[in-house]
Amino acid sequence: MKILLFGIAKDIIGTSSLLLKEAEKNPKTVGELKKLISNKYPKFKTLSSIAIAVNSCYAEDKTKLQSSDEIAIIPPVSGG
Amino acid sequence: MESERYIRQTILKDFGLKSQKKLTKARVLVIGVGGLGIPVLQYLNAMGVGTIGLIDNDVVSLNNLHRQVLFSEKDINKTKISVAIKKLKKQNSTSKLIGYKLYLSKKNALSIIEKYDLIVDASDNFPTRYLVNDACVILGKPFVYGALHSFEGYVSVFNHKDGPTYRCLFPNPPKSEEIPNCNEQGVLGVIPGIIGNIQALEVVKVIAGIGSPLSGELLIFNGLEQEYHKFKINSLSKNKKIEELKDTYELECSFDNSSISSDAFKELLNSSTEIQLVDVRTTEEYNDYHLKQATHLPLKSIYLNHNSLDFEKTIYFICQSGVRSLEALRFLKKEQPEATLISINGGLNEFRNYDAKH
Image (cartoon, rainbow over the protein chains, first blue to last red):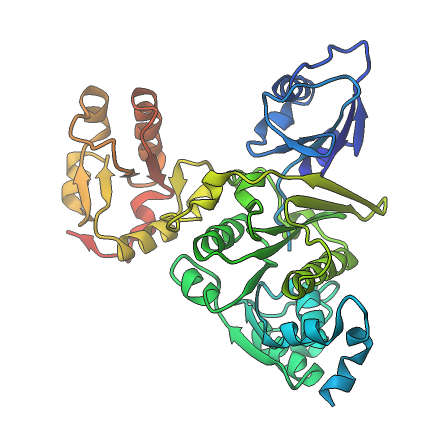
């Protein structure tokens, strides 16, 4: 499962993309994925407003995931 | 002369004189004359948008110059609106430029935005972005959104026909400490130039009705990798049903969602008569002085009995410095999780010159 990171999520995790390896527990839903990332990167928990896209489509916490999916983590950005 | 001026774009098969006439008739409002707003203004003005409104209340600073390329060293300390209008007028004497030397606020948003066909959100903070969204939804105006973070930029066209709104992407603002702004995070000069130009292109596409505007899609540009990503966003009907602006937009972006700055609260006091304001200090402190709108319920009493409060309505809590009001709020939030409870940051110390009643 490939995870693209944008905005502050990229800064927190320190890279623009992550590969979730097969050995790691594969999250079944977007909600589970958020928990998994929060456990690994506690600062991620402080983000209250994040959009998630699965295969380039906006997804909700209940959206189901497959190991072949490409996820994007899209925090709001405000600069102008 | 005018047909000659735009001939390089009117000879485009998919643009033509018809589109040029649409630009001439169009009224576009650009909110924010900064990194994003400047390229938007320069290109819309060059391309022949007939009426352009611009809003900003800032002055030019030295640290603006690396990205706000309309301004020069001699412009430092002058208002952005006056400098921008002067230079844009020289660029195209035929366009009508309307400057608003103010910040968009709850009070002025609807009356300004309603005069325009299309809005460009080139602001630099979340409260303004949510205010622009809500005002545009209320008035049925499409808006072209652009925002930056480091080497990245986001662009979308919101509230265009049946398309989604900003709240379909991010329903609620983040807390203010979560996401740094350009001043804290930094921005590479050319990035707002790229993002602002993409916004200008979207404006022209929407007005002329050409191509596929970025409605229902979020474009993310990554400058370091030269990558463009597009994500589909669904339109949620509840976000199209906004009927009035929120009481305050600052609130949503303050320290947490349950506090309000004293300035924002003063504005609220001035604009609204029916506010449930509870002073939680001791009887001695309350008798010494209090705000005339405040009712008294000391913190100690709140723990025992709070039946006198109307939890159906928003309740504002105030104390001397903002500590006890937060305690009251934390306690009551557990008792009444559904209630809207708000603590006033800094408490009465921030109201020294306000109309405190002795």
